[in-house]
Image (spheres, rainbow, N blue to C red):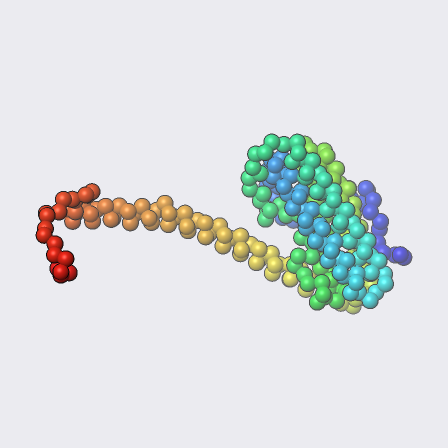
Amino acid sequence: MGDIGTQPTPERALHIRPAGMDALLKPVHRWVWADAHRRAHKLLRFAETEADGGRDLTRAAELTRDALLRRLYLRHASDELRHADMFRKRGRTMLASLSRRGAGVEANWLAPGERGLDDLNVDHENDDTLLAFLHLSERAAAMRFAVYREVLAGDPDTRAVFETILRDEAFHMNYTRKQLERVSPRKHGVRLWMARLHRVGKLYLRFAAAFAGVMGALILGLQYFVVLPFFALAAKHAERRARVPSGWTSVASRSFSFRSQY
């Protein structure tokens, strides 16, 4: 394939270290992954994301006119599908060994997996914009998987899965950068900044949606536990002031006529 980037090696994967918010949120990630049921369900969710990414990359390989990129996209798609199978097998193995207790909150917005191409329409992208997005996506995934590898010291089998996948993420991160510089030698920096802005916009939308959900639940809870009891007390108070007798009351007997309404 020529100079496409460094092949996945254990040494390169070991050099990937968490940075930025992923490093600061390591205690949160440790809490998220501590529950075995939540861990298993998150792995199954990761499997779905990886499989979706593999299908999108296969579509990208069909659309590109660059023969080298076509081979790389197909190689990348094969890796994503293999990752999906690894996550799926490990998640199912864990669930089979656990009781049927519920998984609780998965906290996907606190510890997401690889976003894949869920933020991008492959059919509407050029090679350079797609490579820029892929590079940032793979880099973010590598940082997150490095955190997961560190917090899963108590689960060596799941940690081994992330360790293996992290080697491929290092390769994906490097080949996308090299190919972006090849297909867009003068504007690759601009493409990366545009991709960053796109990701920031999508991150804001995710946060806004999550915040709206939390605020909606909070407002409904306040209405149910604070506002409605107030109106119930007000209604009881008005009833006592009106001195309306409660229950059934006797009505004096009257003679009714079948010939008239009154």
